[in-house]
Image (cartoon, rainbow, N blue to C red; front, side, top):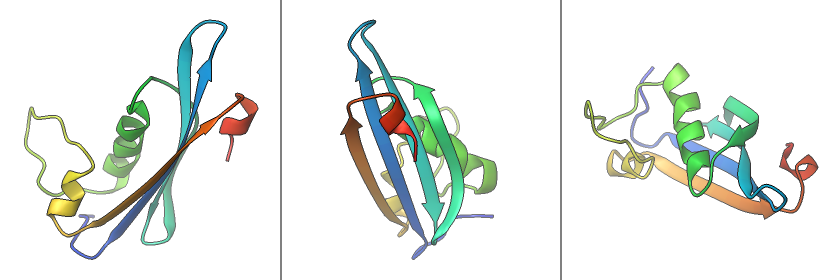
Length: 100
């Protein structure tokens, strides 16, 4: 199935920095038109690694518009195709708080 103009992709992400070892972890929920498309409760990666995880969930079920072989696909490109892309990233204080 292909994401099309006027579809809505909503990503909720939580990030946690583990001070002891200096690692960053995240959890992600991806919704498409109000339906859960995928969820990761515990993933590793700093910065915007949550976005890569969200993209992987989308690719399991949808063809992403404007995708070019060999070029990194940023989810902001969904907006170029008329898809409503909304995200919310929250920093949390514990591993337990990552869970949705």
